[in-house]
Amino acid sequence: MTETLLVTGGAGFIGGCFVRQHVALGRYRIVNLDLLTYAGNLDSVPPSDGVKHTLVHGNIIDRKLVDRLLDQYRPIGIVHFAAESHVDRSIDAPAAFVQTNVVGTSNLLEASFEYYRGLSEAEQSRFRFLHISTDEVYGSLGSTGKFTEATPYAPNSPYSASKASSDMFVRAYRETYGLPTLITNCSNNYGPYQFPEKLIPLMILNAIESKPLPVYGDGQHVRDWLFVEDHCRAITRVFESGRLGNTYNIGGDEERSNLRMVESICELVDEFLGRTRGTSKSLIRFVQDRPGHDRRYAIDNSKIRSELGWKPSVNLTEGLRKTVAWYLREKEWVERVCSGEYRRERLGTRR
Image (cartoon, rainbow, N blue to C red):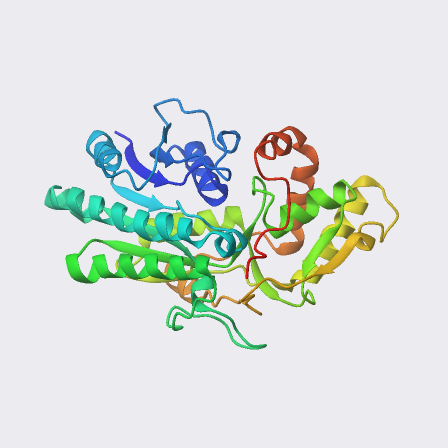
């Protein structure tokens, strides 16, 4: 009998990629709990057939629903993606991030612990709770160095503070109650199906439509970029083989400034559309910086490389080309995902 995973937030960008990978592999039956907010998209996941993939529209804060799903489907593990994730939105409305990322995670942990206590010894030995987090919990780096799993937490935005808190709750449930937990902290993801409030899809779509390309501050904020499919393969590796109670940093070893990233996108869009080189770069506009904008992130992924044998397989040049080509090709997906309240406007201006 195929074993079941309960995936939260599995209609979002990273969670959706994880679900697509596992529906294709057929190794697990996926029960996908998603609130289907603006960033959750049914077009991003396979049909809910009740066999390989069961989509449940609901909230991780709904304890009765979570308890029912655990009792009905008897998963061998939980992979927890569900989160409010956009830094700019957290600046404008931090309370929603506390509610979902902190209260929601705490609720899910409590339900998981009660479920885990009722399992047989053999079932307990198989059970895992994997929490997906971010490198932003570590704060900001100078011009050198990388975040390791031992880097102290120093979150600088309401988003990263909420994720840091949820990480601590996961740790507490391991240390206090013995719940078999794992945590991953990843660098910036990119790839197909990403909601266009994030840097890369926003710049791709604006460049295609010859709209201004807003770059925060001087554009020299540096990020480590990770192709989403590589990230989801790493998550699977951690879930199946990671040491319980451990954290694994997942990074792409691809540092690039935001300005250089935007320039690379411009070059690709011009190439694909047959425009004169430099046409899209002329659309770049430097705008007021985001409050509390971390200067540099970089992940040291040596632990997951050495312990679990994972490494990125898609470099930034290849991954960015694939991503731009996808957004050019999937016009219908873009139109549907942008049909709600979001209109690619600037967020995160509150002070």
